[in-house]
Length: 127
Image 1 (cartoon, rainbow, N blue to C red):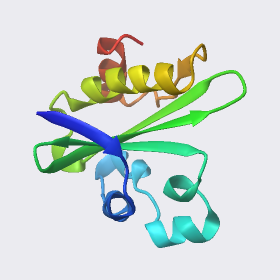
Image 2: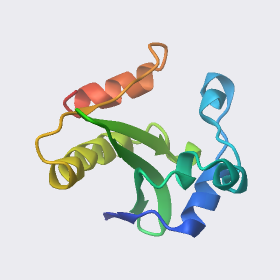
Image 3: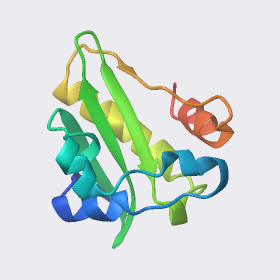
Image 4: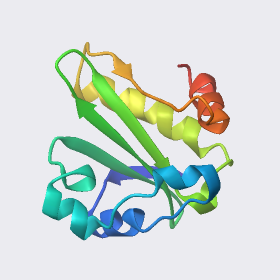
């Protein structure tokens, strides 16, 4: 069963250690301690992070960042869980959470054109 909750400090440390390979290495983030020093990423208080689990496995996270006219949506999948359909579920849930937190504001995202895996995920989720 898939569950989610606000991302904890412990989870922020763990997610910041995830490492992707090949072209996907562009998504590798800075250590959480560094993010905290700079007030960016997981340490930016304007970000709204939620962690997703399949049982006891942390499968990914979403971020909802409110802007003046919309809400920016970001997503990250555990490298060990990519390609299993979790992204669609997390994306659909992000839409629901965004509607609840930021009524009337459209949700948008950005995706690299070469990332066909992500493009398919977002299309299947309704984008």
